[in-house]
Image 1: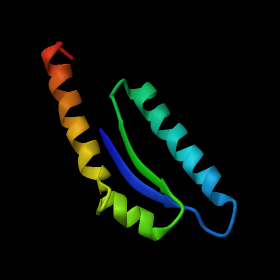
Image 2: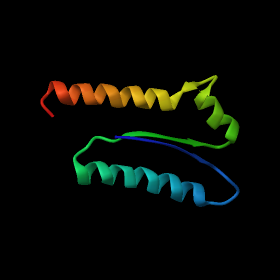
Image 3: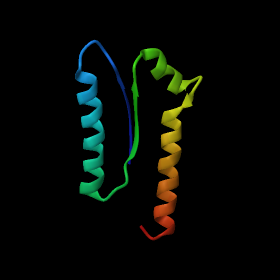
Image 4: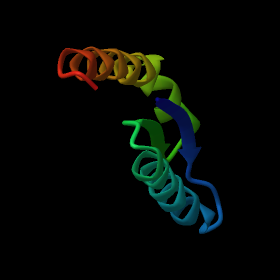
Length: 81
């Protein structure tokens, strides 16, 4: 399973709550289902940082997460999962 998203820090303290609860919830899904979940949620201070990490000058972190998911599926299959 692959979870992609982006939480951008704004003018309120919601960023910490949203980012933390997203990570916690995604982890709980994995534990509850027994299905590995690739965490591809960006946490950035600005929209520019998000764009840079989503295909800009810092690569494409979503594509990296997708490749990690494919590799995880291959490994699970190889080990009989």
